[in-house]
Image 1 (cartoon, rainbow, N blue to C red):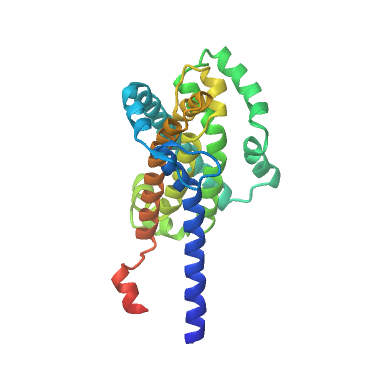
Image 2: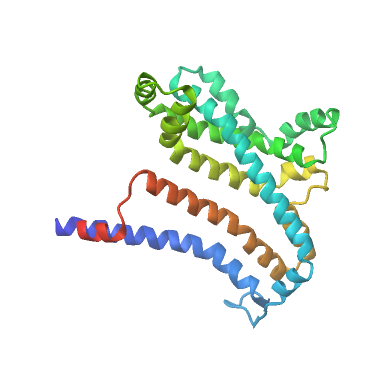
Length: 274
């Protein structure tokens, strides 16, 4: 038993070290670039440190705030709409026999080249006079987010026991009460995970925003792309570092929600059990 515990503990430490290394390599370098003035190959560390990138970011903060605000609006609206479509679609996928061709059709937008999809959707948006608008960007962001949301919710509903809903109806609950008090709490962890995926996909989307927004809808990925053309790596790193914060917060919120839903014991209780 001791040998198995030692092997299990060693494997766990090795896995944690590997994840920490994978995290530290890209984000550690990004953090270093955000506080450096000169860093040339083959130097292992920067030659000079500076906060000039952050100062420059503050000097034209209005443009950054506008890009950050529009990115947040688009990502939040996209996530809410993806939830509204993905939850009922996932229920159908998870509780009813759906033909394979229909599942393939659902995945078609994410297995097809984005440029091919844009050729069709942009023509429709132009005819509707929605091109180069915030609404158009939100609508095209639904193309990659809804399939992921539907697949996540489909797996949730595949393990969903509809007997709880039947019991609630037998006790006199109306459809709204069944949904709000029974169904939603049971699917909330899966919905939170799907919402995080939808938010991150929309938050980091560049190609769809660039073509449909027509350069008028400024988001953080578009701002980063324009900054990359200028060659100011310190400023790019500072903006990129700040752009990571909403994604980290979304992942943290989903992790907390998932941990509470499955009833993870606190750290003290885990130590006592071990």
